Figure 1 (cartoon, rainbow, N blue to C red):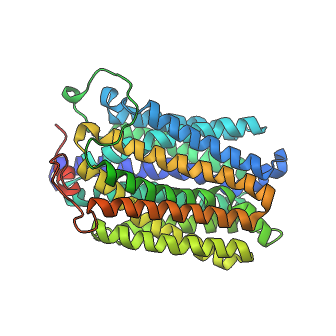
Figure 2 (cartoon, one colour):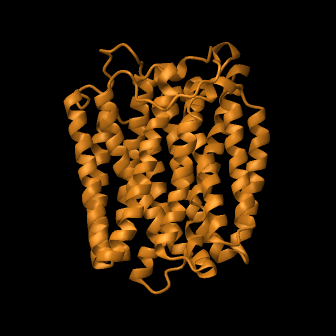
Length: 416
């Protein structure tokens, strides 16, 4: 293998492992919420507020760091993200109140938001030639895979460790420190000649294909809101099915959803964008229907099946959506467009979860669950309708605007 390809392979691998590590931290505390609830006396609404603070951190990072990588480079911004993740671990290690959980989750969100757009673009730009055609899919799969192993690791920790509230975060902190050192040795995707003076700009949709972009975003919001519900409320929902479900059960259910998403992105990465979106929306809709039924009848088995279906469908749709956005967006607009896509997804993930807690308090869990599933299905259907008007179902990579190129071509172009 040529030295240039070895350098690219190393950089690509380090970026993917960093994505997995940072995203795993976002879901690591999920099985610990039961312990925190007992220790700090948290209500269901307060648990959802802790999740919402994380989503706020993600959105803030995506909005305010949107243009920064064009000035300081991709690598330095990713190092800032790792620093936020390390700081979050430090706050978790000393957590003694609800306020400290808010602070820790805000830092976790800042780390995740820093990585989502920038790391995806950086991975595409440094990918070796043999992986270039599917670099965006690998990056999004790494994101969701991290979200999947986080709750599983946390659940195993509640069973195997004497002090999971400290030992889990101490181990994660050590991994983050090692990755920071490795990231310093990677290739910087953005040359100094391509850097521009910092001028803050809000994330914007691409200048072309905005209708398709809106449709992809609506489908993405539907899927991410479902995963957000599973990540934020699974311990509580399972607690209504059985008196003491345990952290491991919650972690495995949430992990199966995110794991299914990552599996779908990698196992079916050769599916065309059209087929991936069509099959993904169908599977995700099936998962939403099962989710509504499982909450209504109180079935943990159906709930787990719903989580797997929702994860598989979400993985098929988000992978193709990022692929399509990257392919059809000019390089100067790409980070901004991807960041805005994730802003929409995480706003959509936070708002329904908070609303569901209020609806449950007023009308009960079955009504709240049914309402959520109905809204998510409506959002997905609207997105499908928007895509139908663009002709995407008949031509997955149209070129009529002349703005973008297929993902494979983008990934093959070395950074200037």
